Amino acid sequence: MKRGLEMSSEKIVFCKGGGCTAKLGAQALNRVLSLLPKGDPDPDLLVGYSSKDDAAVYRLTDEIAFVQTLDFFPPMVQDPYLFGQIAAANALSDIYAMGGTVKTALNIVCFPEKWDLNILGEILRGGSEKVLEAGGSLAGGHSIADSDVKYGLSVTGVVHPDHIWANNTGRPGDRLILTKALGVGILCTADRVGEAPADGMAAAIRSMTTLNKTAAECCHAYEIHACTDVTGFSFLGHLHEMMDGRLSCRIFADQIPVLPGAMACADEFLLTAAAQRNRNHVGNYVRFDDIPFAMEEVLFDPQTSGGLLVAAAPGDADSLLKDLRGRGLPAAMVGEILAREDQEIQVLYH
Image (cartoon, rainbow, N blue to C red; front, side, top):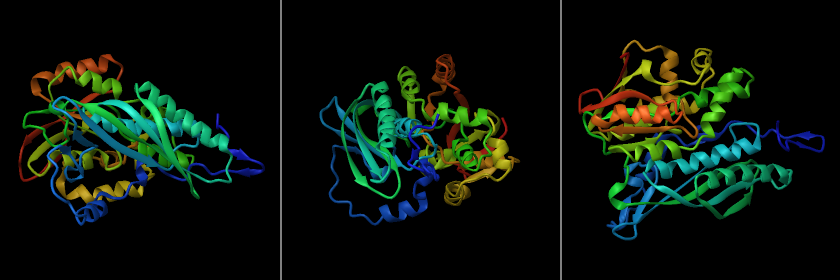
């Protein structure tokens, strides 16, 4: 049921295209960030923006560091309550990707003043429920009047300084495990033009509203060398950041979990501009060995509230995968990290 989308006789167009497809392209963003003044290095800033990681980490004591992140975007679904849940789950995910525990969250809201405030209430209700599910406290926020809706969270968590999961500390031999299926961006694009299969869109919403909390808690019992969450820069874009110019990897296309209908939608060219930006940014680092076009597009597809991509020690990988699946997650072992080779990422069939 669509909540609060009628205002007088005017129908509000709530979803024009958003989620992590609305992110600036990585290439343009990197160019801007490279020009910022760096200042003197702070030895307690353990992770900053220079490492292209999922969140910042700042050491307070020898045993406590705080993890800081924020994320917000326009709606990618028509239901305001579901949008609030998805946006919050997406923002909270960065804490889990660093190995941290969620503590507090602040709302970030852009909303048209002339719209029905019940719509805003539903967005905030959805977000608040996810913060509570994460075990955090919603501590306030900030709002501005805008022509379009945008929502997200600034989130603070904690982590032990010695137990941070950076995204670029994988090792040759590590197995790569993905905890959610891909294809969210393609399906949301198809849904906006009425072409998404009902089961595929329902599966995408279930995936986007599922916190990465369970996956992260499961991973804490095993030897994890690196971790990231797969969001707007796509599976291959975030994988490229994990390789960090010093590693290579082999990805098994037939092991990649894909949401139902996403491949068919890709074959119908129901694609996003963000996916093409991702291809332009990292395509030269990837070699596809007889991989269908649709699977290529899935691997470049921007994900909203995507899963964790984990580099697990080879001796722990099978047990971790079994544990994740035992908790109901569609996890899969999708590849392995190699010592540096001429080709950074090779995508092939197992």
